[in-house]
Length: 382
Image 1 (spheres, rainbow, N blue to C red):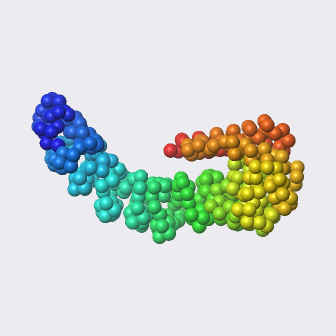
Image 2: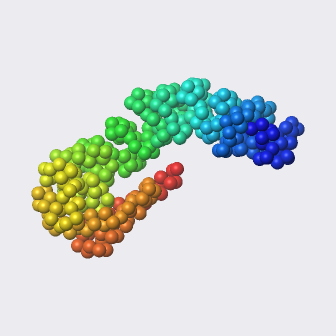
Image 3: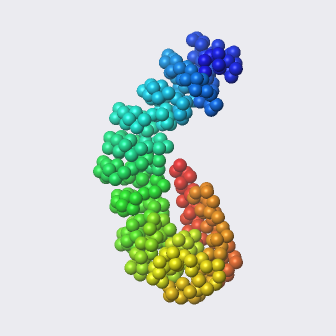
């Protein structure tokens, strides 16, 4: 992509501006246009190589405005030459931060060097990247400033291993607002969830137990008031559990595996949890329980109900819910689609089947209100 090659893609004025040493702003506008063309698909290898040389020239421009145009335009481009990315990442903050935060061509070694430089804004930019490897996460966890570690803790794209978790808990044991950022992650190991319970504020604890699975016994203890700082909904905790079989076993051991809990779990769309609870009560494998519960005819569900010792009065409600569940789709939209699905499930069950217990209806409506409130909180926090 020599100037000759670019001539068909850029106007004559663009080319004049690119070489106009007396007008930084015009040169920056032309540089942005050149970089956009360079980043676009469809160039030949020769054009790409020539374009890289033009990018290198722009990166040495004395005008900060020109270098910033280069940085912002190519910050996420895989075609930005690695040597130019490192050069821009060492520039002033207005030029360095976009590249540090977004460039896919910076290596782990490059990012670790940036973190070890100690500049707070640059550490935060690394911590906020869409993907942060375990190696880089470990260095930030051990050496990063407080703000960077907080951003890292809440970044679901940052890969934490046991060592990185341990570093954060050791360094910030007395800094709850940093530890509370872990709650923002999409998922947490059970042992980390358990450690957080004793170290965070009451408000954060409520968010923790509503977003992440607790170890089964801890969930039961909190639900029974062994610790008064949180109110745990065992139905939703069961739905979050990565091992629903173990959770069902723990509920049974603690005398909490009741028909009411199972019906509420089903009304919330936690069908897998319901299946494991039935299997636990019936003393059969989950696979067999699944076949009987989802039997298209009436006999399978009735048979497993009898074997599990469940009351026949809730059988019609269970059957109606399963039929509704099979006819609905959650959708790919995350929390909002899940809320919509639960609303439709409740509406379908309670409009088509009038015999569902009123207490369970009240519970489901209260939980739906809580879902909507939590979704609104997450959107505001984001």
